[in-house]
Length: 536
Image (tube, rainbow, N blue to C red; front, side):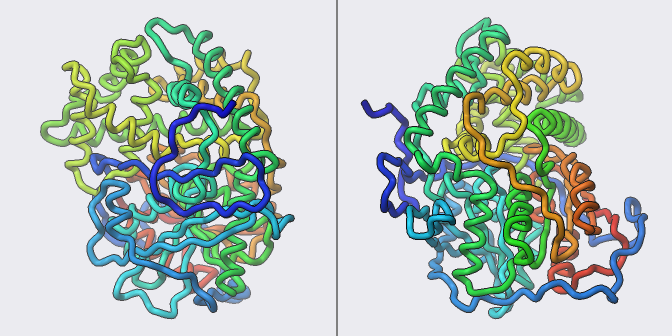
């Protein structure tokens, strides 16, 4: 009997099938994303020698230059898609930026180049200033968010300064919109996983874990049945293989790569699997490559808690902020009501996802802070519609079937179900807003098979540029520190730029970071200090 499922949706690039029996790689449109979000005000240019910029000088010009980046010898067929992209995400079309879309086929398994393929979606941003012969920079945000949505943060914000020298091409991760979106879970499985097992009033932690584990196991069975023999081909290594297919299609020797959030795992996997083909490596608020599931979840809980505290603090300084003078207490109260089942269908997990996603993708204006705060504050008056709408948008962007399959493919060191209650208790005390959710989310990949982890690269063709946002509400800001041993083992000395603003992607929001990135792409190694700071 066919498995019941929610229809995947409307037009998107299709998957060409050759030999996979029963595979359902459906197409889905990305449901709209609200512009009611918050980001930092744009700051001045980089302050040479300013706070946070102490440190040894970067590599000298006596070192060999990094590999040259070149324009594609054989480009794809691009078509204008600014209106379609803006409408898909319910955001304002960026002024002065040309948005174009294309697609290409990539083998599901590179060891079987004549087998099944997936259709990979690309979105390109450029301006009138972008040189026609400039090498494109390839952006991925992995399974965090569609890369096309992350690119729109840059195209609409201060990071568009980078477009003056290079076009940026976003590659949507295979398995999520719009790159061959997967459709392999039932409606009940999706709902249970999205709510981390909270389905009724008075649900205990143990009951949530049990219900979530059952849904995860059932979803794993269904997706494995649907995707066999390719159920393990949607992780970071497979996404890196799609980048290699793109490099070959373009006919270039090296790629300039930008990995945002979990996309940094894709970029580092590419550097490991495809040797010197990574001509430039920009890691934007990276996640801890190769870390086990427990450590990644704990790092995320800690970092997102910091981001939400920053949101509350900044909002309280604005006239009319609905969070009041203690925004953390307001959000804690809201999540408590949702956890108790007092907000109807809005669970604590869904409410937190709504807040963190909206904050991550915020436009750079104070009003966005106030809009998000108003949606939160309205809940106390019994008005949940605004926050429910944000939760639906967040789920569409972050909780698709393909996103879950991709994340579970990459899990290392899974946590036993019997350990989770203790983690919920301990992490909730450490991070009251985020701890329980991060611990419960560990159960989402229960029963899933994981692929072989990619070994860290042993060498890098160019010292990376690391842009670290300390208030990222998707992954937190601890990942950059976790990568230090990797860089040491690879014999690499990155330049690290720290930024204390709110939001997802430093490069997308900071003109200062975009300026450093432009210099890095043109001339590596960079001259100057290896530890820098960009103002908010």
